Length: 169
Image (cartoon, rainbow, N blue to C red):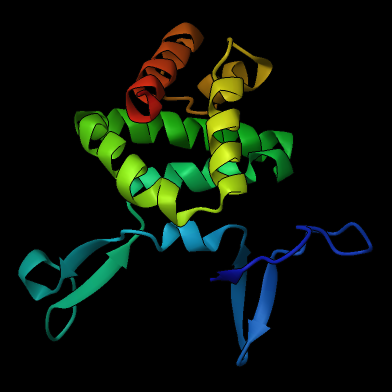
C-alpha cells in the first residue's frame, strides 16, 4: 500500500488506484496514515498453523482506525463502494461491540489527536450524516450479504448506538 495524495481520479477520469513502486504494484489508499495509528500486534507462526519457520509479529490496523478511515474516504467513494463501506463498518461494530468503551477512550486519547482538525471534524460530521436515517445506501448495504437477512432499522440502530458510545461526551 502507498498513500493516495490528491484526487482519487486521473485527469482522464479513470480511477488512480495503483502505483508502481520499485517494480511492484501498490494500492493507493486515501488517509493511509490513520490505519497506522495504534496498530494491533498479531503474532503468527507455526504454533497457530501459519506455515512460517518462526513466529512473526504483524501490525494490523485496529478496528476503530479502520472505521475512521472509511468515514474519511466516504465522500470520494462510488455509490457501490460507499454501501460496502457502510456494511464493513456495521460488521466491525458487531464483531467488536464488546470493545466500545475501549474504542471511546482510544478515539479521545489517541486517534482524534492524531488527525488534523479538519479530518477529525470530517469524521464527526460524516458519522451522524451516514446514520441519520435508513437511507438508500443503508438499505442497499443490508442487501449485500445474500446469506444474511439484515434489517435496515436494526443496522441503523446498531451503528447509531455504537457511535454515540464511541464519540459521545
